[in-house]
Length: 289
Image 1 (tube, rainbow, N blue to C red):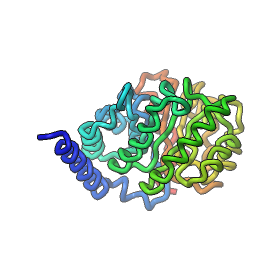
Image 2 (cartoon, helix red, strand yellow):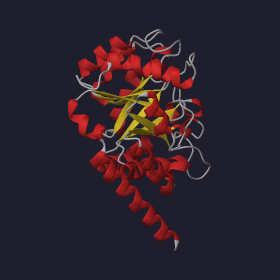
Image 3 (spheres, rainbow, N blue to C red):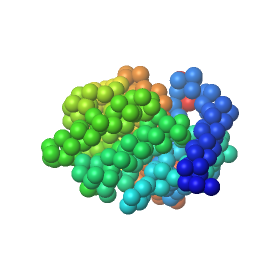
Image 4 (cartoon, one colour):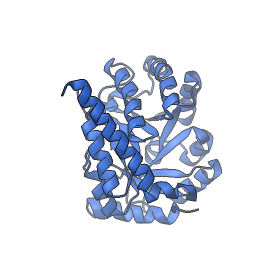
C-alpha cells in the first residue's frame, strides 16, 4: 500500500470515529443543557498526546481531555492519523470528549519567529476539523513570550492573518494563551480582523501577571474561546483564585462550555488532587444551569 493510500485510509478511520462519537456520546447530546463541562490537560495527568488520558480523566470524574499535539522537530505527534484514530477511540471507549487541542510546543519553538510553526498551525486546523475539535490553544510562553516584543507580535499578527480564513472555514477557533493583558489581546484580535482568533483564558496565569481577572473576563467577553482552571497556591477553592467570582464573570458574558483543569498543586497525589479539584469545580460550575 502506498503512502497516499495509507493516509487516505487513516483519514477515513478518523472521520468514522468522529461520526460515531458524535452520535453516541451522551455528553455531546447533553450540550443543550447549557451548563459547564470539566476537562483536564493531558500533560497535567502525565499523558501528553496519549490515548490513555481518557481512562485517567474518567476515573477522576471529568467530562473530557484537552489533547496536546506533542513535540517534534519536523512534525508534531498528533499529525499522525493513526494517533488521531487511537485518541478518538480512547475517547469513545470511555464515553468522553476532546475538550480542545493544544499546541504547547510553541513555548519551545515560537510562532513569532520559527518558520516551521506556520505550517504546524495551518496543519493543526486540518487535524482539529478531522477530530471534531473546534478550539486550538496556541501557547505563547517561554521562548514564545510576546511581552515587550512588538516585532514578535507583528509577526504573529502577520501569520494569523494568513491562517485565519482557513480556521474560519473549518469552524475552528485559534485561542491565544499568553502573559498579555486583555487590552493587548484585544489589540491583536483587532489587527488580525477575524472571528477565528480568540483568547484562551487561564485564570491563574493572568492573576499571576497582576491583572484583575474578573474584570478581564468581562472585558474580553465573546473573544474568550475556553478557560483553564488553575491555582498556583493550593487545591481549588483553597488558594488565590475565587472561582465563585470567576463564575459570576462568566455569567455576565454568557459563557457556557469547557473549563479545563491545569493543576499545579498535587498535595494528595495526582489523581486524588485532580479528583478534589474536579469535585470542587462541580459545585461552582455544574453541568446544568
